Image (cartoon, rainbow, N blue to C red):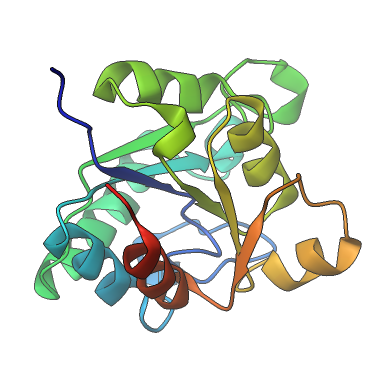
Length: 185
């Protein structure tokens, strides 16, 4: 009998940290949204692994390099750890929309890689995002999709084109509380 793997997938910009119209291009620009790191800690305490799935076309556009992206993620990991939270992995797509890759959301390739790498069942693994592309990528593989109203979330909600079954939460903290209160695994 196999053990169910408890995992939550999060988009980064607009879900964990504040987003910017011109990308987060340095560690100094990375600022956590209030309650987001605490939400990750709460998920960890309940036995969930947390994985980030993020488009980072700023690398492909030459706005910042891999060393800078790694430094941004290092800051995120350090800030999380300071609050007792752990992000188990960060998957990213550095391609631009013109590259026509399979890993850039809304295509589901990045989420497929996560599912394979962590040997998870998509139908019981939530995908949390703030943009239509996050929800579309998750829904394509059968992940339960959750929209947070931070970042681009409010505009995504108001556009009214959410995949069927999308659950909406004010922010990541509210998602974590609701998800854990209603989780059956």
